[in-house]
Amino acid sequence: MIVIDAASPVPPFEQLRAQLARQIQDRTLAVGARLPTIRHLAADLGLAVNTVGRAYRELEEAGLIETCGRAGSFVSAAGEEGRERARRAAADYAAVIASVGIDAGEAIRIVQAALTSGAAAPASL
Image (cartoon, rainbow, N blue to C red; front, side):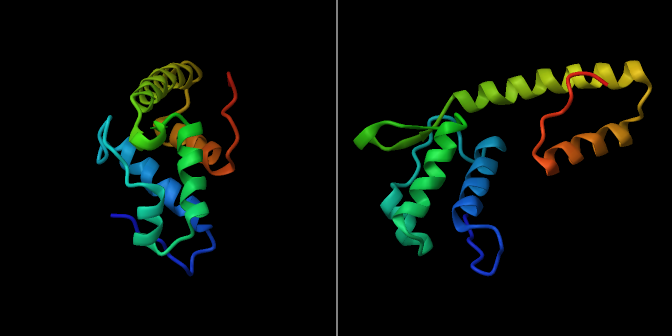
């Protein structure tokens, strides 16, 4: 279920994009699942068509969905590839953290700070 908070400082397209991305990443929306049309979802959520369109475009650019013209938009298998890349990156990061003697709590704080700032994590410590 998607909920848009009109009082939130986060723009509606970003709220929608983030919620759909989370549903794809946690597999609530399975690979190949068909998404509602932009017009239908906009009407259901009380949003402008362009707002939903922007969220879909950003999801497509991130490789999480595929748009197939009149056939609609579907959850992409590329999202699974992204999870696999993330797993490999996490394993590499864990090896670096262990080699420099940083504990798990600090390693998690480093990742959270990188995610919050939107900056890419450094290649090495």
